[in-house]
Length: 226
Image 1 (cartoon, rainbow, N blue to C red):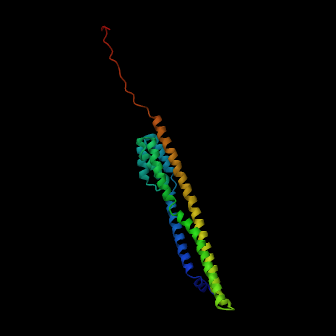
Image 2 (cartoon, helix red, strand yellow):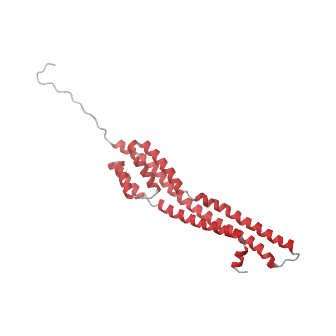
Image 3 (tube, rainbow, N blue to C red):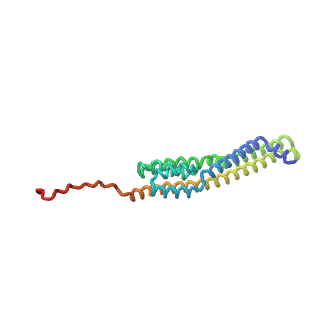
């Protein structure tokens, strides 16, 4: 029995597993590309924004961030904080919290689907195994002394589906864990920005000299009656 005959003997469940494997590879490739874009190194831009905030204020830093058009998650959180900095550190913190939740949704999108694929692929392979063994036992019911060729189809269906289910599960599991580790690193950088920006704003506010209104009493003319 050659490979083509072996795959043909595996039955329709093998095509279901093949479709699932295509979905896993496609999802992993799309998410890897998205994380590569969201995880571009933002350190230089963040440091530049910090220096501009200290020198010229958050509005100038926001203009610099917008001009850079950096796609990273940390920069999106930074942009949200600088955009509300004129309302105080508390408003900036709230804006960055909302932005961080949105970035988490973008970072971890697709990972639950890969986890689900890793769980159901072995079950589909096991279902193919059961169906193949049932077919083998039906041969014994129909024939008193079945030949190896008669038993081969059921056994092939059982083994090929089991192997295919395990392969798809391993690929989905490895891809999901690798992508999650990458997303965790990006999210950590975004959280660091959320913690640092209020300190920038507070430090700038402490360094500003408040305007003081000076009032001078008129000096009485010489010889005037007191």
